[in-house]
Image (tube, rainbow, N blue to C red; front, side, top):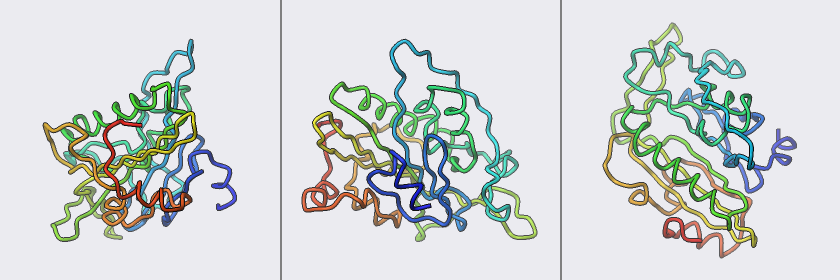
Length: 243
């Protein structure tokens, strides 16, 4: 797997650890058996070439059979749960072709999100990242997203428990860390932690140091980037989207 990851563009600046790492054609998932959902999802925001028409959203949600059944989320787990199948890698980020868009509807890329969160602030932040990526000064935009659990609070679950006691815990919050590489080779970093609930606040209100995401989510972000400058960047809360 290490050899495969070394050839992946989105993994250029590192991938956190996970129980099972699944390399898709257009993004990479780090899956948690314990949480029955992705621990993180890593992508490069897909751009539509000039003159190419973006494909329609496919909505072909389905189980990911690469995951052992005992740890796998299925469509029935979300049925009448009151929660959306929330994308970690946004469908709208991957619309150059049907296969590319289809991959984002694997349930390994889903996490139980409250509807007004998924269709509100989370969608707004996804759109804001695409705005950043459309800046002519930006060469590529790397994004890693995932759930955060606060073990000091009660944890609710979705999914009917079977004989193995399988259910899917509902995250308290979600993180998104954005690494933008400019045409001059400079790297700029923004990270966010957003509670899994409705809010009227704007995405910029949820900016945090990247080190805070690492501490809360229990992962290392962009670990192939080393040195004092990167260490300072991880501690910084950069103006949105100042490059």
